[in-house]
Amino acid sequence: MGLLNIIRRMHLREKLSIREIARRTGLSRNTVSKHLAANTIEPKFATPERPSKLDPFSGKLAGWLKTEIGKPRKQRRTLKQMHADLVKLGFTGSYNRVAAFSRNWRADRQREQQTAGRGTFVPLSFSPGEAFQFDWSDDFAILGGERTKLQMAHIKL
Image (cartoon, rainbow, N blue to C red; front, top):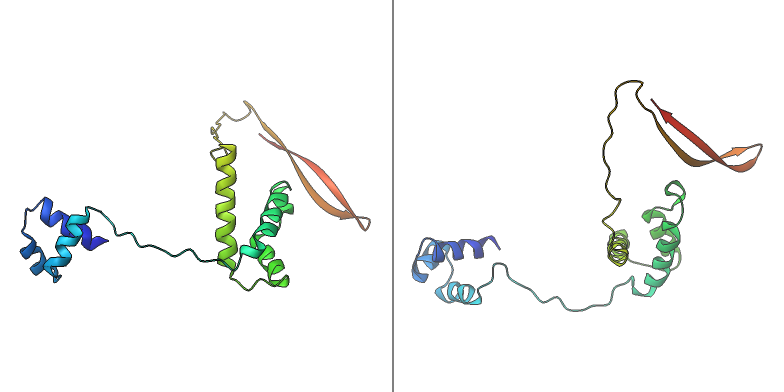
């Protein structure tokens, strides 16, 4: 890709002949002519359409991602845990395939909802004692041998 830019710059800006460009780059004149005639900045390689090892499991993984997105952040399974679960079901692919699928799934979901991600935040600054910030959070703890949901209030002066 960098060589194509060099060839185009030599021809368009420096006004060098094809023969001189071929001499300086070590390419044949035919190759230099082909790249200039194509009028592209970077080459495009055709990648064949191949089935992925993840294809038979994509429905299950998409379902898992959909249910996990509805849970509180601390209770969600990680992609590594989902990959391990897929391996138990017979998936022989890598973690990177699962992570790439998840990225694409989330990007598609954001486009569907037309959101820009986590939103816009305006930083607040106050003089000491002028105002305070208040927020709620949920967490779980085992109290008396029983799993209990705790709701906590956070106050910051």
